Length: 495
Ligand code: CS2
Image (cartoon, rainbow, N blue to C red):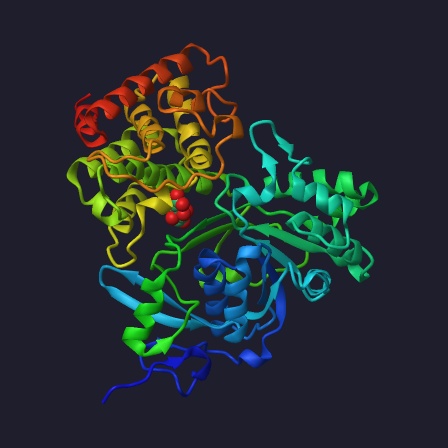
């Protein structure tokens, strides 16, 4: 007998296929306590998953989420999620198998470009005590190199001139802040960044205060005193949602869910315990609260994200489209191991509850997860920003100790070669680079090195250590162009 796949909207706690876990709490009783901006795959694999567990294991149903899409491109996702009443399937996979569940934490959805007033009303609602976000590094409109806010960005200029029709995070928070400041108990609220950006809370605070200074300086004290901006470290490998996720639930459970998300089984969230108006007791579902996130963040960014970059460019040039295939290549695995142990590890603090050796071993296993099918292009994308955040601090550290930088200079050269969009065997490669500085966007093959002579890296006039590093990069780059990245890797490993 053939079955006709059912839309997710037809499922209920009683009519849910065996094998899919249904939210184990009374969804009708859930109240919105968190407004979250940016409802992409990562948010739906991470924060809402913790909240779903939390609501299932406690009686506290006060922390449901209103998901807000800010970008024009979010329209169809928000529409589909609305049609499903905020429900979607999450499939967590490792090499032993996979487990699917329906996540029920999202209670309401709003598409900001069409529902501005509703968004402002929701952000200003006194029951909302946390406003969280995953807006990517670009969303903060912050020039990290010059440590200043992009006040001349067209969207910021628009929001300053048209307070009634905001486009950016800051424009919306401004309008919500004006209303909250008039509430009883000062409308206190926590602004919680969940982006993979170093010191994400500090960046958010600086950007918010810089914006409000321009928009309405009288409101600045409220943003300083009634609002907190905890730093947080987030971790879960979540490939961009794709047809593989929708096919999986359709094939295994005969359920049609265009909003399905797939991810690994590992999950971690370390948050500074600095909340202005209370928080869910997420320690009950293994969220780690601490007074200082930075050691965790440093360890995660340098080991996980740094290793990802270490393997991504060389692997992509060598023809590997998937991360699990790349890490199973002996030479690439050796490169990643050497990077973790010889380069990154000596630069890391000791954290009793995140010991470095087991963490490294887990990472190799996580990268090898063949069921999530993580794409190399996802890791390669936006490399300019990622190298600056995850790899450059290691380089700086190594140079200051006059340590070996062979692997790092090789990796930077692979990044520059990747920008040429041709693999070792001459096939054309897709490139996804959004944040190259404008003037360098068209840098040609022969002046690629100029990309590293910018404020994000070594500046126009590198110091002698920087010059020596760039010389190494140049050497590797030429060799890669000449002989291919993979053959060059073999040389690099011998050094
Ligand atoms: C990846 C991250 O995009 C990247 O370069 O390294 O998205 C990584 O998967 C996450 O940080 C894991 O928490």
